[in-house]
Image 1 (tube, one colour):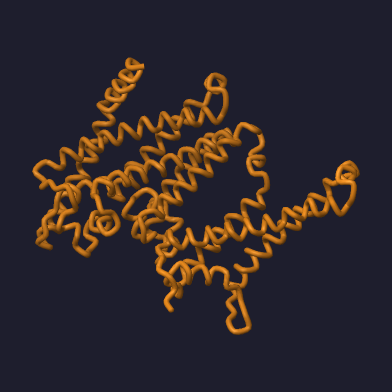
Image 2: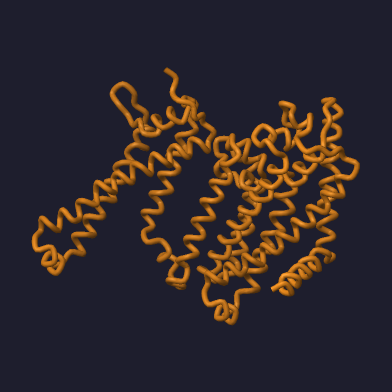
Length: 396
């Protein structure tokens, strides 16, 4: 066991000091030196001292470095692993598509570890002669936005936690992207589709943080790659992590079903209508948080499910109300039709009467209604909290 771990560490260090990673380190150093010079300039202008945390957060949270260097590098590595490692001899050895995808993810995580090691080494070089402190600097505590640390200081009490969250958010997004590309390739077996989607992901990430309006922050990929960017958009520290965790969980769920039918992708979703309805509900609840009327989550909760009345009518609110509730009634009707179409004489004989059969089916309806309303309430409150609404009670 010890020799195996030692061998992996040795291989990791050998990979770290290859020529291509030295070039990568030089690029990181150039970005870091430029950020350091800018921070010293702003610090002298404001007459407030900075420390090492300002430079560290600037280097690990540089949006241009991550979007234009780190992301394409990891996308290229992800594609290389998926396309080169996909062999039926490997699939036979690992036993399933699911295990193979996890195997490719492990290889990508090794590359991410190498990048993180080089990143840390370059940061240590840039920090030479920089003042050291355990806490945030006086410069970062300014109520301005000259640097990443000035944004994060308002949300995170410990600067070392901010650095760890930087890497964790980036890692979470890279895992989600790789799982998506690997699942897509398993389903299609088309190299050009995987390559095209990877290029689209990079181009969209490069354009989204520049072109998307502020109200469309949920669709800005930069919010899930760069911590301070996501904090500003979501107005809290946990929003990007919640969305990213939900995405990874959904992909893992799809991955758990991927070996049930390797030829027909449609069978991964029991019913496409249910998936679309769920996405529509989430979009309705999220769009409701864009209103400027609400102050607390309780205001937002009321606005989400207000609907319309003779005194106050809004087409958007009415359509949202109609989709949320009558859509559920529609699925109840589909359930009844399915029950009726699958009911034969053998089932009626088992219940011995139509009444017993009907009440056995009908008792599921109140339970489903209660669970649906409870889920709606939880989703509404969660989305409102993630969007930054206050938890204070309604004013009297």
